[in-house]
Length: 380
Image 1 (cartoon, rainbow, N blue to C red):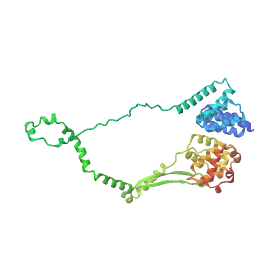
Image 2: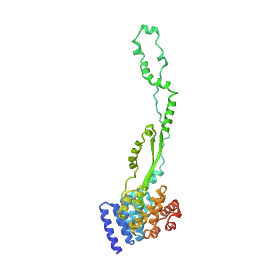
Image 3: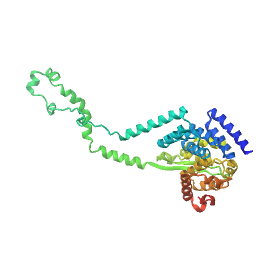
Image 4: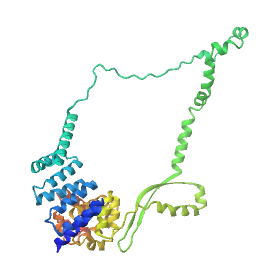
């Protein structure tokens, strides 16, 4: 029965994949894998969907699972090489492609990918080894700065003899400098007069502006008895002090109402099934958004939501999200860890976690308190 259900889920995943809905395809393939863990084509197909979503670590993990079931699968080696290229593991990707090329020498896709990866490795090696050429006789660049010299004699009044003999003809033609002096004088004079007083006024104004501004931290949340919580992110809000605000206290109260709505976190879809959760999880990549997704489901409903379909990769991602957001939500995280401990076969799922994922779990348990979590989390 489980094998038939796995084939049905696989067909649904193939349909979603062909339609370009890769997140939904991942959900169907995950359900199929839970029902039949011996069919290596299921993680192989899910790896293809992960590659389309850019989730290279998950794709590499699935391809490794395929190779543990079928060591001579060239397609798994090819897809794992693509995943490793995505994570920058070019040498490991080249090794996979060389093995795949030996298994299928006539496969042009493998040959082309191997050539591309090999060329990329060579270019990187050459770029690291090639020194930077510096001309030995190169002269340093010099910057030319224009200098204007102003003669002090411009300010001196002309002599009486010159004024009497040539009253107005010499001044505009032979002495044009006073015209420039007239243009510069209004800009320099106020600076010289107020040099000592300007900084003093500026410092007083800066201190007054600092005293008149109060910075507050706005945050909080809505906590419900059914476990559906809404957490508002903490942020700083600058509120200017004014006498008008003290005289009319009704205005700040009216302005605070829309301010609360602006502090609400961006809306994320509330999952009603495992497919919805997996799809939303793949679309929203930040820890804050993923924390909102998982906590939008009441803790008591998690065992029924996951049933026997919780995958090690999803569990590891949830634990990492809890670790990144546990500073301000420690009690909430403890509640959800307790709910997750009731998911069927959780102990078996934990066995499939990698050493790095187990380290994340240990750090999370230490962070929220070893004595606060279920014993299933302490055994790791």
